[in-house]
Length: 357
Image (cartoon, rainbow, N blue to C red):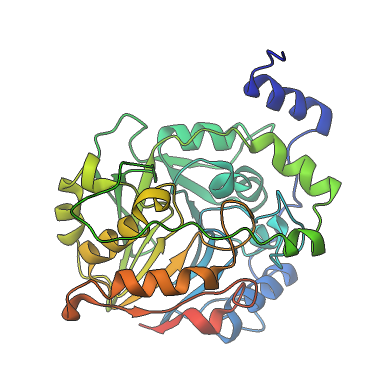
């Protein structure tokens, strides 16, 4: 019997597969690469000559899983920082280099697992972006590169009390970070009607987009990166509020008081929320619904439901029917517009998520 610990296996992979992901440094503002990247990710909201983004628009480009490029109030940010490619290459039509070329001012990390923060160190190193997350996120992301020169801001740590708030102001944008929970399986909730849900694996994309050796070298060493705590973020500019979280935890059983805290936040216009999670096996999409119910957004955009990891997820379209069923359980006045995002057609589609401020 093999007694090799998974951590030892990953450590071995780090040595066998080579060093950390390295990207080309980003040039000065207005650099041709930055202009091209911003035009690709933000469309007409980015100036064709300078790459400056419109201050009167909020624009999001979905990059797979729960990573989004965000233009808000004239600034560019990343929400999470990972391009899915551990099981397939090219399914998401973007690269970490392009995310760095966007020249983001900051990268906000929801939690530290590889599928959320796996490219953050290289992107921050190349672009100079400030990384926001828990102390553990910041430490782990700095360790992804050989000599980290980018700044980090710690918003609590993995031991911060669930429900703790942190307030930040950046480039005139008010930001609230709330400590919450990662998705986790709990016993079936007898008080809730949510049905168990598990999508049938779709292996076609893997056969059509086999992972390259380069992508495997970049992603396999990150597979055991720790969670490091989970943060939900709300971004506010005059006339517009965006709330984003990259996991939906079982708050019902483990921290129901957080629902009241979320309900007490300023009114949410657009809510980007993870819908895939471990609790769908026993409680369906109850947890994502409960987040929506507490936040009461005008528009809900599901994420973390695309087919980059067949066997655990499937094409986002398979989530449409159960998600609509869950949202239909909300009181009529609390049902948001559902803005579905389907892979791969809605990757890097800024027209789907552009909002006037």
